Image 1 (cartoon, rainbow, N blue to C red):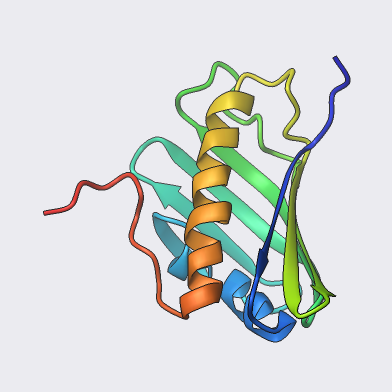
Image 2 (cartoon, rainbow, N blue to C red):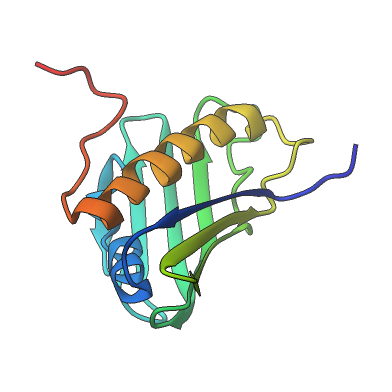
Amino acid sequence: MKDQDYTISFSVNQPPEKAFAAINNVQGWWSGEIKGRTDRLGAEFTYRYQNVHRSRQKITEFVPGKKVVWHVVDADLSFLKNRSEWKGTDIVFEIAKKGDKTEVHFTHRGLVPSLECYNDCLAGWSTLVKGNLRKLIATGKTQPSPWQKAA
């Protein structure tokens, strides 16, 4: 099997600028604790979800309305044998106008089927990107964590 990066896409009835703004409102769709700036080139932020996942991202590309790239500078995923499996990978969001819709193309470069994290991370990204992020772009409303039980 070819080791291909994990990628998914979706379309929304919003302009590219709204998609771009929502992607950079990381706290609004990526469940967990976010610390640091997520909205400018060169910024770094940390993500933490309980004691399960901690990572630090640096924004290495930031093209308004078109593209955002986060380079994973450090990672600690406690459920893996190689807890730093994400380190050195890139999380890429590409935005394009397609007719009257906007398409968001997500790729986690370096997240490939041969990695231990692949299946769990695939499920997580699918929920967060195709679920939470898509809903945030469509409605403008921040999304609750899909892993926390409703009260």
